[in-house]
Image 1 (cartoon, rainbow, N blue to C red):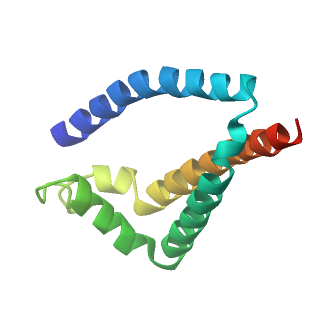
Image 2: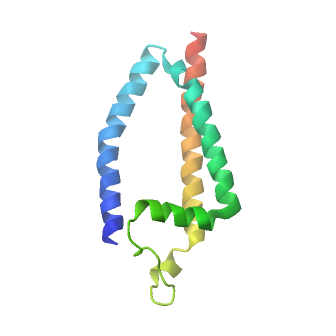
Image 3: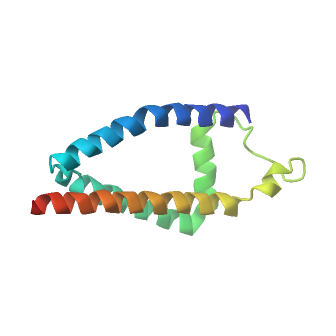
Length: 123
């Protein structure tokens, strides 16, 4: 759990730095009607997200394993449900729902920025 704690702390530090910068940048671009710059990158990123979500639907278990192999350099994340009750409390279905919720929220936010971009082209 120490590796997870470090990843959560790193995530929090990155968020504390990037959210104000991103908010300021978005405010600046909206104020100057420049959000149209995001239209094409959003289209590409949405295509990637939809492809990723489709792959998750097809084989979430394998993507979940690859995700852990990418983030953790050891095999401590490989839990045995018999020895470790945590794996039973947080089954893979829970994490699949979390991933899909994250992708859904991200798509909504990208849709809002895309709408702002289209709106800035009309001004």
